Each structure stands twice: as structure tokens, then as C-alpha cells.
Image (cartoon, rainbow, N blue to C red; front, top):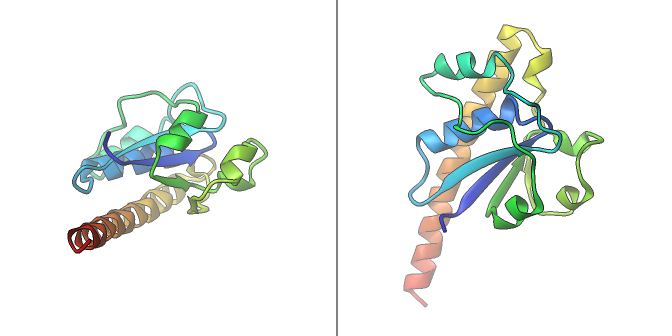
Length: 146
């Protein structure tokens, strides 16, 4: 099974869906990403698809989905978008090792604000990809010397 990055936000309607799409567009070798929400919406935010299209990407093939304990356990990397401060954040999520990017919910912002969040995500996802490539190289080097 490929190592997975799990992107989590409250509704899985904008931030985490965009992060998943960005990561999977150019994943590090062998890696994949998925996303979920602690209280998923029924559909993506209406601006998420068009905002991704502006940068040449499409929405992931799944609707907003509920975060499950199995997803949390399978993921090698877990990234929250700021939902750890939300009342909907489950206690088991708060107790796990993860990275929180603490990005604002773009659904409450105007289009310029939505784009700022998208572009911040783009930079952070790119940084995460580079970190994972370096981590995999260091691990491979250590294993070859063992």
C-alpha cells in the first residue's frame, strides 16, 4: 500500500479537497493523498472546482467524505487545515501526531481571499512534497548502510 497523506478540514469542501488535488497532481514517487472532513458537506464549495481550474487542476473524484479512524491510522502524514480549534474536531484527532496549517476557511471569504488560501495551500503542498522526497531519500540511504 502506498504511503498516504491525509488532508483534513471540517467540511472537506474546499481546503482539504484543494490540497488533495494539488498533491496528487505531482506526488512524490509512491505517495498518494486523500482528504476528509470532520463534518463533511454534501458537495464541494461551488468555487473550489473553478478555483482549481484556474491553476490547471480538477477536483478529486470523490464527494466530501467523513474522516474515519481507519483513514487516520492508515495515513503516514496527517495535515489539518485549522479544524483542531473547531468544536467538530474529534478527540482522537487531537491526540495524534499531525501538522496543522491553520488556514482560514475560504468559503467565508471573497474570491480574492479564496485565491489567497488556494495559493498558500499550493506553496505548502509543494513544500510537503519536497520534505517527503528528502525524507524518503534519507531513509533509503540509512537502509542501504544498515
